[in-house]
Length: 391
Image 1 (spheres, rainbow, N blue to C red):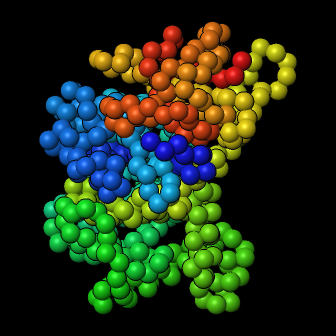
Image 2 (image 1 turned 60 degrees about the horizontal axis):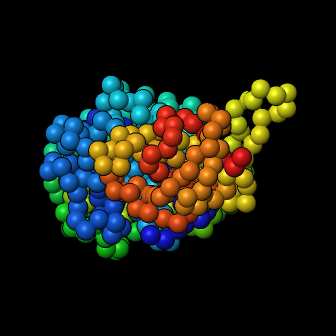
Image 3 (image 1 turned 90 degrees about the horizontal axis):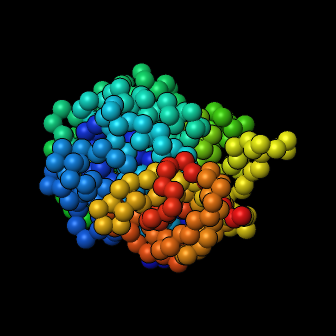
């Protein structure tokens, strides 16, 4: 497995109400990126991030899991979180480990109670969000009704960056309102869209939606607003940088569409995450909890040349490996067999066999850079929310 530096890492938590299609959507992106040999399905228990017996039997996520995909020179870490009220605290536990959130909203059900709760968690951590209309190939899936539900819940900062081509069982692709191109797919195919011109029957709607997007991006930036008034639009290069900035500053919440089971537009969502969500190194410096001394709390930049600091955000029991700790490297580089100080327990810990998690599989690596997520088995103290670092 290639080792990635933080500038090329994107960490996202995938949240939403139960049965909104989160796990299936992650399976589609993993398959599209070549991370899995076939499209995993929740229905038959082959989804990468729903692997324990209880999740498979109930066909629902009951514990967060991590998977990753390599896409266009970047590594995207997904934390798949539960969507039922009893387990929703797992979504909050994932927030310190990510720089962005993908909010899945069912194309039929719209925004539901856990969607709003997970949104609030992301608000508490000041995280940028991308909204995904999922399962848009279902009978009675309605893009406009879903959009109305999202705007009613989260405000008018939500803006579509795609239009659907077809609907329900005739869904065949999306129109990219940024590049003004169409991408079409085979239902249940490999997820790689064919780029082409916008269908004639959607050209007027696409142009109108593009203009609304341009205007909303320009609103928060004086230079872009001046360009917009002078030319009536914004050049594509400026639109890309302006949209990236607006998403990072949480002025805009873009809306995309997918079908996880049909593997439609998973590649466009992957590309959007890589292009527009913050890199792991763009996280603001992290401040330590106040110590017992009189000095100011220490801060760490998310950079390899800082002292190592590691935050354990989840632990789980594995029948073979024992207790596995999931961690985020906030600073420094953690090498295999490193010995770090557990500041929470004032003891040392040896990190033997540091790994990346691909669902239930631990993938060994030689080192993990600042900003990336990792895992290690059999720490002496296995509670989540422990901090480790250079002594």
